[in-house]
Length: 294
Image 1: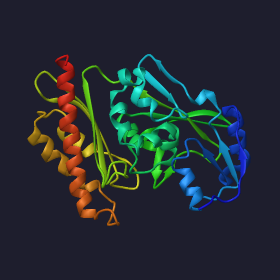
Image 2: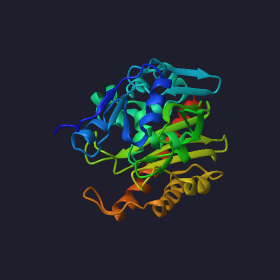
Image 3: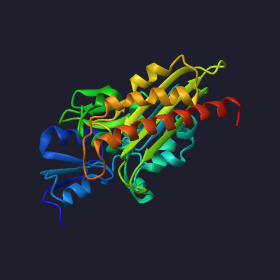
């Protein structure tokens, strides 16, 4: 398999990349890590006239913390999230999510911005982004704008970027010291796409009741799904395994994925409740361990 013919451009700055996006619009595609785009090119599922390679833009490769916000450049490799001390301290969930992304070879090439822009509903980073109330920063000819992660994923592999805009960063709120987090995924094999996955961040008060809870689910619909129906059922309730299991069943109503070669829709409904339950239970345990200093 060979990719179609295209014009190759490798801008040095974000502004140059945006100028190319503005000029070629829908006829162009952006190359970051290439872990999704290159197979699509080779299978002729993508046929751009222009390929804009942003790997040479150093401004997209920074991780910075300002106050209670951690900003990760779009060009940061996914593997860096596993090892960066600032990430581990500020947003512990990311280090738990990234090991599930493909294999280590993929993570050494794949980028944070590329995964978000690709908007695969089964992908791990989009799921984490909606769970953490992240903000995606995009830039176009008119400047920068911020899009809440929950609004960024508009449909199947569709994001809220205009044709002349580029994802330049994602911002995550720094995790509360009282919170615990967890990520659970079920796939046919290690490194495969998730049949269903769930991320959870929980806070539990001294009385054993949930004071805050956020849950994101991947692989069950055309976009990653925020499990608000489960969150609302649990906040204020005792953080027991029984309460969590009962509330987790409510996610089944949000499953819209039908039958495919990997699983039936009925199985995914069951699986969605299972991964949500496991993720929340694990997040509660993590919160309790953190509060105990262990």
